[in-house]
Image 1: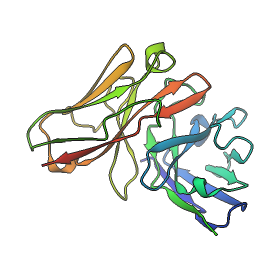
Image 2 (image 1 turned 180 degrees about the vertical axis):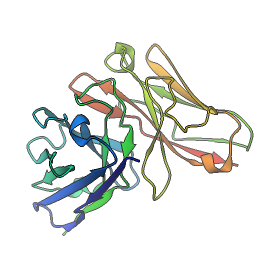
Image 3 (image 1 turned 60 degrees about the horizontal axis):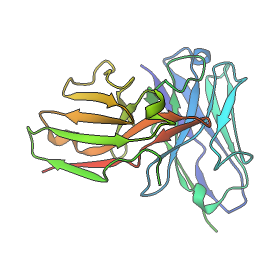
Length: 123
Length: 110
């Protein structure tokens, strides 16, 4: 059974930093492209970033480009998201999700999701 | 405002059929990219319901079905059950690159 467990969320001041982690089990981690998707309070889902199974290719939403960095450690079956220069509008539940292939494709679904970790940016 | 447009809410009685629409444009759904549908229940991980426009992952009841035509897609739920009450999101891809979600639809089972 595929399991994705996010951690690292919390309260941080505007301008601060945070690193989120997503521990994966029940899958061949290096053969799965991975993504971060967030949901702000009372709002819909927003794709944030994704990375291919090798870690060599990544994409970012315009809203986080230059501030967030996605990475992965395939030896630890763990996905990361480094959040820098945080803004109030980054407040959200952050979900990690996997894709069905090693490569990133616009045709692929997010087929398994974690339960999310809450990031609150407030002074 | 989401690029993919969904109705904010739909409702139906147990046993009835409801549909949720998802309208895009020529740079996403109309460009031939697949549409996915997800179910969000409070406090649980989002769940993939439909992928590739009309395919159900293993374990998803056949009461759920998807379709796509032109720049739009739809999710249909037949034999509505109380446990279907949730938020539903469509998702596709838009040239940027960007993975897009609809604004979400809250399903109420009366």
